[in-house]
Length: 148
Image 1 (tube, one colour):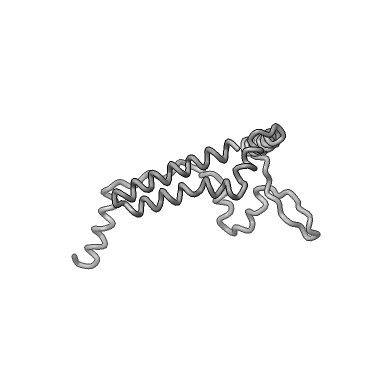
Image 2: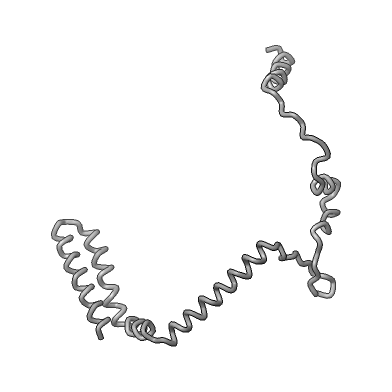
């Protein structure tokens, strides 16, 4: 009963603010305020406020929210541990439909000739970076070739 009274008072106050806004010739804003003001009355009329009030004060409902929170926390914990360990393995479907673990290097032959290069680290020191004069010499050679 108290929740319905509060919702009605909020709606009445909102409609009053909408009337003052419309008096100031801001009609679109007044219509928006009116729309927001009618929401609490609509919720009271549908019975949603009564349901929410009975749920908010129910110990059984709060226990249910606690169980849902614990479940979410366990899912998050398992995912964090899996991410930290890296234990999620790729699975391939075998001929009989069962799943079998696959090692990370099993797909290397499918990559072709470049598979060895992709999986091996670089053999020696990396090549030195080109200096800016080398870049311009290439451009100069192209320009000389075309007679420019």
